[in-house]
Length: 55
Image (cartoon, rainbow, N blue to C red):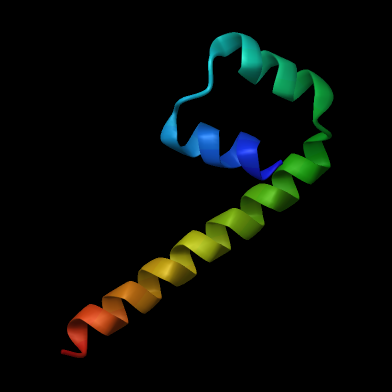
């Protein structure tokens, strides 16, 4: 699931692989994984900004 999300995020998945992923993956699992991934990315950005601005 994380491979699907990360490769989709950076845009390196081929059309055939993307279609296969959507055929195999459960929509609820993709949604939950995407929300977790979004929270992690936003959290990492907040931490990075706090580190940069505290110097």
